[in-house]
Length: 394
Image (cartoon, rainbow, N blue to C red):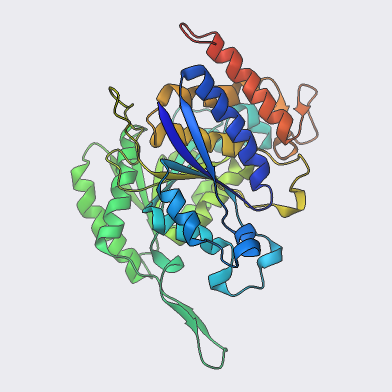
């Protein structure tokens, strides 16, 4: 099967980590009989430098013509003094809106191999985990195209005051809630709506809509939590959460907090999905000869880290795992996605670590490697895994 993937490496370490993800995708294509055609596009600071705009019109149009988009990172100090509408981050907002993606899935799980990199004590993790293990596995579903990031904003004529407006419609809230419920249905069947309904009118609307939508999913336990309490509960009892659904701003903050608990933000992948029929749950594989795809935007949640760009230091695993999410949610290639995830797990089992996920104090069994060697280790694990599977191999 042939698929087209738009590559948006972006700024800083974006090109470094996207290059490793492409190597892994190419290996998957070779071993499973697919063809991935790549279209490399500019967005972010690099696009500002070359065109004067963070998201050139031809970039967005070309991305729309592809089956999925894989992005690295955008932004950096070089462009921080530009007006808001010309900042690199506007490229992300424009891509999300232009591609029609509105639900951002950010899984955060503590892998046993990275237990030493987590700042939370074992007894705290065990106390909140139903199975008593010192780990957690949660999913944050963040609304992407509404709220403060897209609301009316401005400054007073004298420049001494400023405002940002959070606006949500029932339709915007309902559609992202349904993505959350579909996700919970294939997980542990628990969903927590996070808001600030004791203060914000927009949050009270979230609760009203959630109460209605919850009736369509009676087998899923629905709870509600204020965002300040949720920020605390993520630290003191992360195992209590399965799926969290929340607004744009709250989801942005909480997912970065959750990333620290996993050991490093360099481990967290994300998928931004739209109105595909299976958005929020793994897409059924294509049947027959007709290609079935759901457009999605996939990216690691880390920033551009320009201070280490091009130095073979960055952790590529979040981007590689984002590529696995792309195969699962946009192309329905579940076996291929699991193969990538299994290869990442095997690589960590073998002791490979970039410096951001190395144990405190260092462990004798660990092998500290750079970006490219981590990518090579994943490729080797993928080769061993796929070659050993019945009916697979070159």
